[in-house]
Length: 111
Image 1 (cartoon, rainbow, N blue to C red):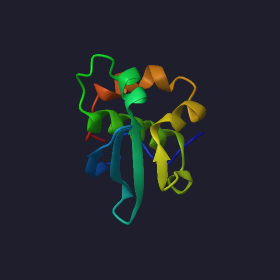
Image 2 (image 1 turned 180 degrees about the vertical axis):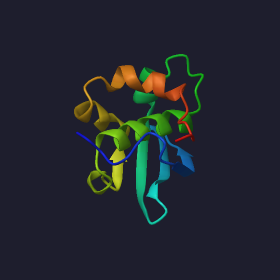
Image 3 (image 1 turned 90 degrees about the horizontal axis):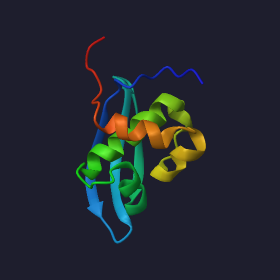
């Protein structure tokens, strides 16, 4: 799917809360100056351990990587306001390969 977004779009995370099942975040996905979308995002321990098997990555970095791939794969309006990281596998077949690379490759700020 061609999306008007690129991986350069800002993802702002706040309110990181660790739970028995993983983490929850409040995320704001900014498309441009005039439009953003607030999302409640969940990252389970199981998904974190799959994408960061050594546990060396910050949960927020894993969450941003997953959200970047959602943004590359979906229109802004199609991204649910309550989103679980595991949903990425149904949308992007190679997500489990792409996410670890995305964790270690921050978005470029250049045009």
